[in-house]
Amino acid sequence: MMGAVHLLPGTTFSNVAERGDYQAEGKACMTLAEIEAWLAGEIIGPYHADIHRGLGIPPATAWDEAVERRTELMRLPADPAAFLFDFLPCEVRAVTREGIELFNTHYWDDALSCHYTRPGGKLPVRWDPRDLSRIWLELPDGDHLEVPYRDLRRPAITRWEQLEAQRTLRERGRGAVNEQLIFDAVETQRFIVAEAARKTKAARLAMQRTATALADAQRVRAAKHSDLPKRAQPAPVSGQCPPPAPPLGDLPFLVDEKRG
Image (cartoon, rainbow, N blue to C red; front, top):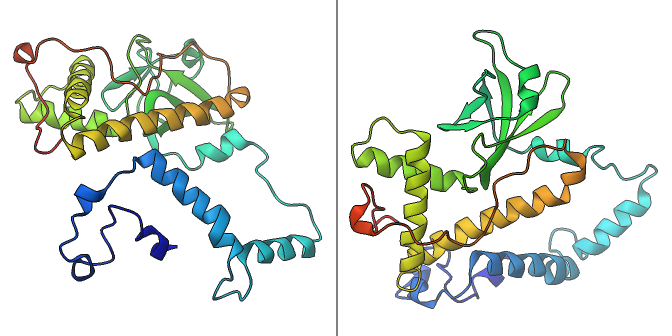
């Protein structure tokens, strides 16, 4: 598998000595989505069809034989949505009349009024780093309540964008980082990345990372939508960058292009 990966243009090889003077960045030509599709095809096709050195037979054959030997049905998650939640990051937060605050962003749903926590009390909150436009409150009975932004006009952003926005704001001397400043910074960063996408590899990768993460989160959410409680409509999700921001000279914060 790794040998096949190293045959792709842009490989960094296994070590510096093997790489030599090969210009990996200049040879790279695939986006993250394309490399994911290639890797899935490699696993499904050649890897499972070829003789495995440890098994002595193709992995696909080993799987079929193991399934035939089973005396009970294949075990699958009883609740696919709950299965997904088990793999999402978790924080504990208080539920108040202001809703839930996570990463300097407020979330609200009318159903939260039935789940206010006592002073000092907190409940688990699941969140998807690919799309922070909604979170899931884990209730005492094990169910999950989907909670969108309190301000539904805000765009979906990734955790990486949110962290970069906070870093940029703090470097610019804005110690009191708040929700509006974060979303303003993300909008500015997206504009800068879009403008630079034709010029630098790092900017292209940053834009691809955001678009892919948001698209993946939207696809997963759509697949399990019927298993989740019906809530208020979320802010629109798009893999595209937002409309041009105000002139750069009027903005109080800019992305550090050397690190962006």
